[in-house]
Amino acid sequence: MSKVVVIGGGWAGSAAAIAARKQGAEVVVIERMEMLLGTGLVGGIMRNNGRYTATEEAIAMGGGDLFQITDRVSRHHNIEFPGHKHANLYDISLVEPAVKKHLLEMGIELRLTARAINAEKDENGNVTAVILDQDKEKITGDVFVEATGTAGPMANCVKYGNGCAMCVIRCHSYGNRVSIAGKLGIKEMVGRKGDGSIGAMSGSCKIFKESLSPEIQEELNTTGVAVVPIPEELQKGEDSLSSKACQQYALAEYAANVILLDTGHAKLMSPFFPLEALRMIPGFENARYEDPYAGDMGNSMRYMALSPRDNTLKVKGLNNLFCGGEKAGLLVGHTEAIVTGTLAGHNAVRQAEGKELLELSRETSIGEAIAYVNEEMQTEPGRSKKYTFSGSVLFDHLQEKGFYTTDKDEIRKRIEKAGLTDIFSTKIT
Image (tube, rainbow, N blue to C red; front, side, top):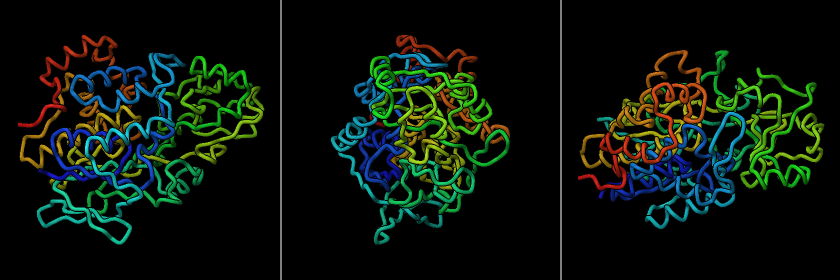
């Protein structure tokens, strides 16, 4: 039995672990925090726009476990908010325990509060072990998947953002994110904003729902969405939206209104908002940030360490390291992390078993997205953009190619035509 070591237990790492375990591998997940899912602990938006298509493709390919979990724990289904249709909003309090239970029931070993700080490789370019912070313990394996994300550490948030915003990543307590590919000598890329500056700011904050007016709370609980106009003198202007990683929300409506989504708390669709100004808006007089704590002034900075990879998600320059999530490119969102993590975990086992690696057909929206983003990342203009199934550059591209649909039968037929039905749940022979 091959052994797959997954570094990082966010959406991408959890997906990679599930995919590898489905192929019969022994799987261990190393996660530096005490919970799984990373930024998924403050996220919550699924199935909006082209993410619906990608979700149903993944399900048809046998890689739908995490999507089905988020469907089950969603507080609201099939809602609309500015620029986005047919979204589900999962409950951020329920989702992590449900994912953890699923991984444990599959027999996946979870090493929580275990931070990988280094790695070793042999003279042939094979990764042999990752090294943990505590006692310098070595975790050996046949193949490795890096899904550590690209946000932080604190020094980057200070240097390229507005300082450490004390976000859910909690570098103070659990240590900085460490790039394993970088430690192994791989030259990684950094993302840039349109003005050329490095990184991008996380795209939303979380407010205690109970700190909002009863009217806003009721609207959120009932409909899942609250759109509250901002007095003109308090509007930050559309230019402020360019700093966001989530460019699918960089629309005029998000500058003119406070847009809230109900994920158990109130998800504020802005990278930050000065508290003094926020409290001048009717209904927000007692507003308080929950994540990041310094949402008054900033948010975490992302896209600091992007691995060069091919379309099988193998990291270039090493024989047995794969990547998923933000490590695989300027990809934004949970859906994007899950589908790349799934392919990375699946191919990790193929690599260990000496089988041909799987490159998803560009006749699918997921395969097209993985290949298209990889091509764009090779260009300087491409590295200044952000890519998501739900809006902006990638969604526009997929619509132009005719991929976007909510017709499940059409999606299943597409996957069948590509010869990919249940590919992730069928044992490699």
